[in-house]
Length: 249
Image (tube, one colour):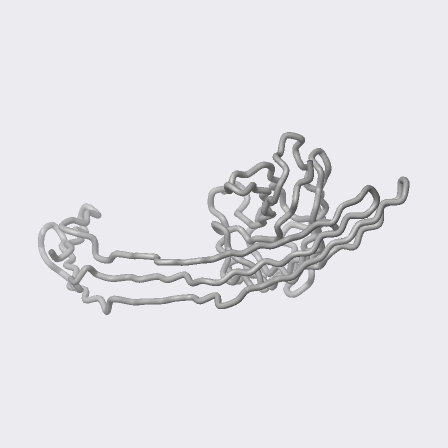
């Protein structure tokens, strides 16, 4: 049945003019091993992802749309559909290691630098993340430093949000704040160092948790800035996966 758009009332009837389907498949593998004594803690592991995300736009076998004005036809639109797109992730792998020594009251930690090269709306790029530790105890704070860069002049202020989610995808704690300086003051291609200490609640269950980061316009927390390029990481509901952190008992 041919779709009709009635101009005078802004009404569409008979049927929709296009249909979308988003087939996807992803396999994510994680492995880690820890060696912990009273004074020494060491962890090594890897993550690996592969799969695809597709998008199919079709017209349901009806390529035409009529436009009426008070019941009088004044335009016919013919669509060149279907359109198929597919993004493949063949092998996205990372290997990590973390070392910590404690001598009386002195703690020495060997941290990691995570290369991201991810972009938000072709406007903001996350170059790297400095994560001194990949394990944290309940009640402690998780330190992280984001290295941001503006790809163009940013005219709108954005809030940077951090989500700490469990294995079921539930947010256990989060932090929402404008970076300092605010995004409207960022010069193009100048690295912005954004350090934050995320408190871990005392009732969080031990185990692996995902650290996610993203942006939204000030005053619009439900309008997340889309991830135009996940770089060396992956998009988790318009949030960039930073790392998998282990919460210790």
